[in-house]
Image (cartoon, rainbow, N blue to C red; front, side, top):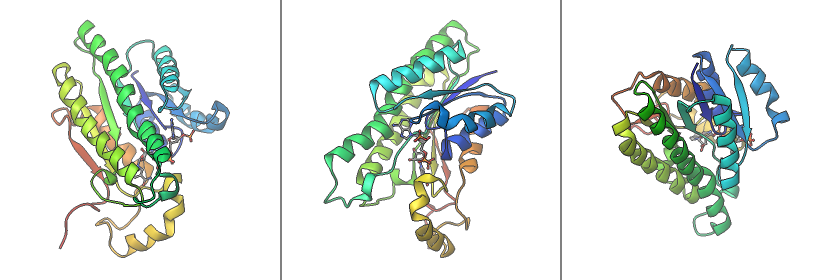
Length: 256
Ligand code: NAP
């Protein structure tokens, strides 16, 4: 059985991804900030699917947090991890206007939504390269969860938009660098997904969706993103490294 690590996999989109991967027989290491007692239900649900599941508590934005996450995941897998999903992320605190945005929020968002993914990818990519050099049949894969905010402007979430745009470029960089080892790297770009992150803007998006914001007239759900990641992990898009998979109900498709 292969092992995956999903940052921020304890709830929301990350848990949707972990669930779909577990359905397909992946062992899963989920990560989050909460103590392990807070995620026991999530772990039980994953284990009930017949796979092994572990929790790696830690802040992806801090060096110590990432070291701990890597230690737990490497010990759990006992070999190189085959799949890293960089999903952990937070929205812009207070959703402040661009002209009022703070340096503190900027640093927090960049660390959580971009720096964490970059250095976790670097560490796991080095493990994958070593495994591939030792055994050519090794199959690794990295998936980055960005957002439509990587291309769509929200002036009350500048830090978030910039971090997601950076993550999108990071996706291309790793795809390019890992190509020679046949390790694909993909960007999955969700639109408006029902989760704790969007719980404060439900009425706003209910109205916009009813008015035709997306071609597919509904909210996206964590399992929509999970299904996309599972198909990438399965190897269904093995000649498409570096590409962006939109999971946005065609919200970003230009229309007249
Ligand atoms: P969510 O429901 O708020 O869940 C966030 C997850 O990330 C939780 O598991 C949380 O752990 C974890 N997390 C937060 N900060 C962390 C940190 N510093 N270190 C490690 N884990 C951390 O959010 P979501 O809606 O599922 O979003 C997941 C990803 O999708 C994010 O990258 C987000 O930007 C992206 N996205 C979301 C939407 C949307 O509409 N919801 C749209 C596009 C993209 P705890 O449970 O321990 O707090």
